[in-house]
Length: 273
Image 1 (cartoon, helix red, strand yellow):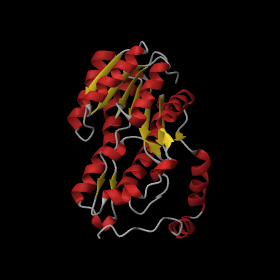
Image 2 (cartoon, helix red, strand yellow):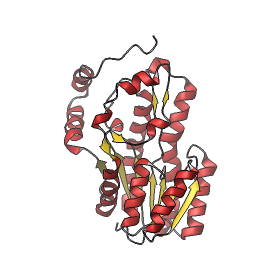
Image 3 (cartoon, one colour):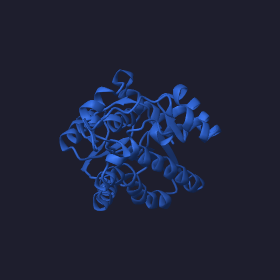
């Protein structure tokens, strides 16, 4: 799908990957609807998008709430007339070992990272099917392709769900004229750490062990997403040379993968001291 003169809705669009994508799509001629919970950042992106000569709508939206996502759809359709691209990108992080997480903490991350994507698809698919065209981009993670750490069980569970949901959507929607991509970034420098929570442990200790110097700049992501929409590419990776060999190794023999990869991970610190 060519993005020029299209309308794109992006949740979590006021910062990080969402903002990078919003600005790149605007540079390529798309009108932008940004949904976010941070009103100040929504206004900042408005200035940037409008400076590129594109129409802009900012909507306060909590993707963990059905009513907010439905209102986002309604406001986008009233203001823009139609929607061509829906990117479900809003996300949070929850860190901690499996035994240290409450069900309330599980619910918090799943309602945003997994069910937020499902709500976005549910809200916009009927409109796209009625028009006979459209495009969905769902932000997952390499954590949805393989479990890369011991201390991300909630995040990994949510992202595996997004990858599976996206694949099912692609099989269902592609024959009906609606494209689907799933974005699986590696470590990207964003502000997700600002809202991250730590279950049953010490957040400062965890952050101190993150290889943040390896994070790629978020500006690389927008062009990758825009290119994938144009080329109707299903899987979007920010570091394919590093990730694809691991995905292939995992797929070849899951027993061998679990045994070997578990030995390469950093050992869990004692978070309870």
